[in-house]
Amino acid sequence: MSTHSLDVFASPHASPVPVVVPTNGHPTGWTYEEAFGRNTGLISKEDQQKLRECRVAIPGMGGVGGVHLVTLARLGVGAFSIADRDEFSVANFNRQYGAKLQSVGARKAQTMAANARAINPDLDLSVISDRVTQDNVDQFLSEADVLIDGVDFFSIEARRMIFREARRRGIWAITAGPVGFSTAWLVFDPDGMSFDEYFDLNDDMSKVDQLLAFAVGLTPKATQTSYMDISKVDLKSGAAPSLGLACQLASGVATAELTKIVTGKGKILAAPHYQQFDTHQMKFVQGKLRFGNRGPIQKLKRRFLKTVCARNGII
Image (tube, rainbow, N blue to C red; front, side, top):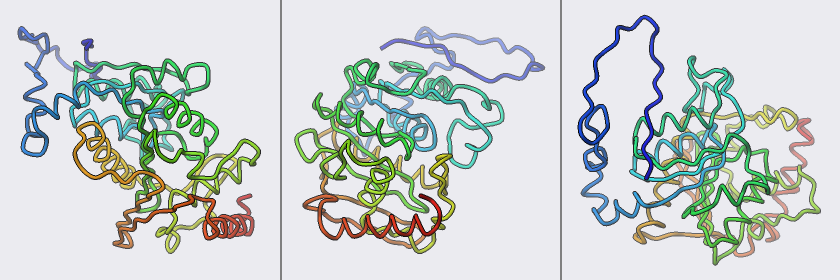
């Protein structure tokens, strides 16, 4: 693993503080064993080493992707490939980990890389300051063990492409999204049902129909509908109601699923199984869509959602 210096926001008026660098090269005497030693008792030393040797690819460092990175870094995951072309803005403050006064206008990928290195200075980090495309997906997924989805909800074409490429390489993939006061998640086994198969997506569908299929397939029970104002969704600007607490929930379940994948311990319910935990409704729902979105009930839900969206002027 490569070693990087820490990136720190410092006041221009602060007095310089002499730093004594121990023999391990880290100013605080940081060691991996001490930093993640409190995992012991829940994660064995052998499994902690597996996490340390694991590489996770996270496309997107915004609302949920940035929290994924930090949560996984605190778990002790030792290597990441991250990508994002955007910069932080004030509109990101309610949910995005890296959004602070000091980071307005800063590149998300570099900012979140600095946050992760401040947790683990020994991280092996591959940073792409662009969106993941067909041209760079090989580089992005190179040596990755698990893909965790941080793609913006509205970027369905990019999401499909990344999941397709991960499957082709035999990589497990997790999508865990913030939905209202809840999180909904799916795990994709490279030898099981694919992303496009589960959501019933194809290239002949319009982008609107693909997004509707993604929304319905992600939350088949849709616990959030009783309190979410769908009229606040704006397809043109790519804005929708969102909460930081739901991003935290999503990262918690995604990290738990990754731990099971990497260590081989714990039950994994891969697609067509789905799960959603809603803190507002105090509900945990799970189930299995044998035919994914191709089932008759799911098709009815997709048509109904399209009617509701049209009625609210969303499409």
